[in-house]
Image 1 (cartoon, rainbow, N blue to C red):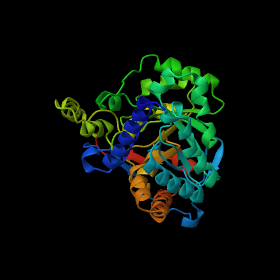
Image 2 (image 1 turned 60 degrees about the horizontal axis):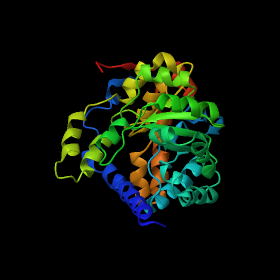
Image 3 (image 1 turned 135 degrees about the vertical axis):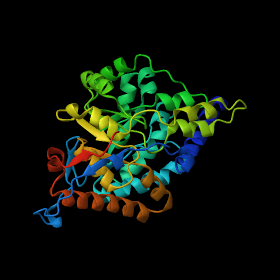
Length: 353
């Protein structure tokens, strides 16, 4: 094994470990509103249902889950991620949540990396996964190699994440996005599983969503601002003498769309196409608001990351809390299912977004 090869993967591990630490740092959290406070669910004082009647069952990617909540993509490919992902996977299986894996980029150059997910899948066989790769890797690599990434976890689908600002502020980042749409179209035609697209915290506009739908994308996760701000995070990682990346990232504190803004923009599209929401989801009430705005599933990240670092029990507690809060929110507006929540006029915008 060459020194260059070893150094390359050592740098990768160091960066991924830093991502975990900094994602929990208050300085990397979005400085602007997620806009959930602007969405008001209409309280029903006489719901005419029992709390026990409320079901969160949701069909995603052809599989029946107990909740529209899913474990959002977080981390992979380094030593610390193994314990974190095992805890998340086991809890996802127990609660029957879908789990999106962290970036599988390393598997493209280090075939041993796939054993992390194969081991997790073998020890938690009931967990249902979605694979995950960045748009740059999709542009650069043969489609056949990208599709192989789904095999290690027997994935129900594959995420392609879009992270232009993160790459722009990452030390040695490669913000090469040219021919991205063509690469997505190619993957959609070749993939035996559904292709999902997600941002990483800046939202997706209606115009971009329309392009992705025409390209054959089956699910769009708007992943809006309000949670971890990856531009600020990469800026904090910048150790260069000039401090250019760290200083410049501060100018983008308010960049992008919240999940709320993206869902409102794409409201007409959500009726016939599958939109998911993530980004700054901190309670089951936030989830209910996303579902009322047309999302079909809601991703939870940072609260689960904090819990997974602590213990198995903490992860289960967070999942249980999110599901219970969502169940009570449905009860509170007088509906007994997630589908019913999306169909009824149960929310309104309070003020200007």
